Amino acid sequence: MTDSPTARMIADAIEASGKSQREIATEMGYERPNVVSMMKNGDMRMPLERIPAFAAATGVDAELLLRTAMLEYMPATWEVVAASRRQTGPERAFPVQDAQINVRGPAPEIERFKQLCQAERRTYFDMLVQLMDIRDATLNRIVDEA
View 1 (cartoon, one colour):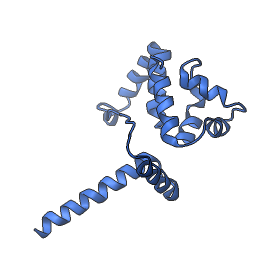
View 2: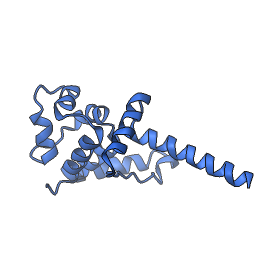
View 3: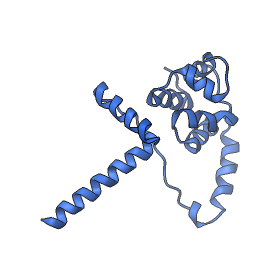
View 4: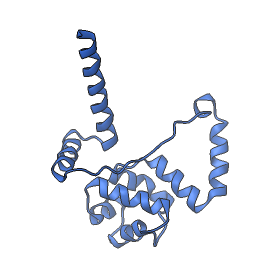
């Protein structure tokens, strides 16, 4: 396993997407899946201009991946970008800290979740938010009825 945070994020996104490296490579505009494999293993850097295509193919947050890649590949440049973003207004003064999880569980349940996301045409994150909102609403209803 690589020490590269970007490569680890890429590997997690590929695994979570449920797609083959060939499918992701095609969606990113690459003819060969070995390019995706090299990025996943940390043997090749993710070209920054390909991050939106990778994010669309895998469902990973493009801004989080861009930030991770730039902090690793060109930290001084990222600091300039981050400083200019902080100066754009109060909405950027205290940005929400992004995080990413890799969920392990019984294969049938993980596959069921992936199929649900695909059927609803939602990213894993969007589906998770929707399920949490439904859970919260249900709990609030139960408490109100008690």
